[in-house]
Image 1: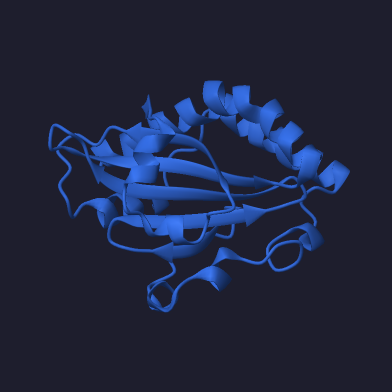
Image 2: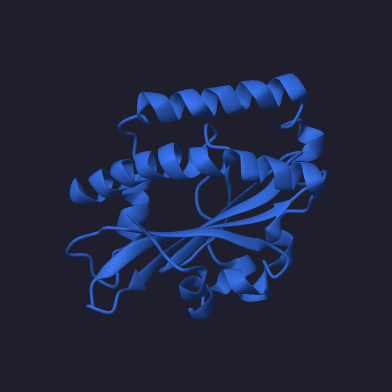
Length: 191
């Protein structure tokens, strides 16, 4: 996993730029996919969706704690989510993206599909703290190899959302992203 400069994401012609001008680009990461070709993004997505290993214990524990806190403080109530506090990004899609496949939703995953193309896809979630987007893309590196990239875009909900994002940053960078990296890179190698 390599953290990329956010400018790298902004300069590529991703469709996500059309619908997230009011979001802040939080993180951009690249994941190793040795031997990947230009048409392998759907293969990678299928492998990520396949049942497999759980997240490592520490990452699972962090997510459990987060969902428990959300339940306790009411952060994840339906009234704070998509279609209530905020409208889905699907409502902003241009016609051609609206007609494109949406992608599959997993009931156990809080991120909901916005769109899915041959080289990028977007998923979103909203709660009382943020409206967030995970953008996955398939990009060619300078050496000609292809890699999976993940960009995280957020629109914090006021001062509380900004404080929440600052508080979880160390956990994202030190626990969650490294765990995702190992899991996603293993998924690619076992395809």
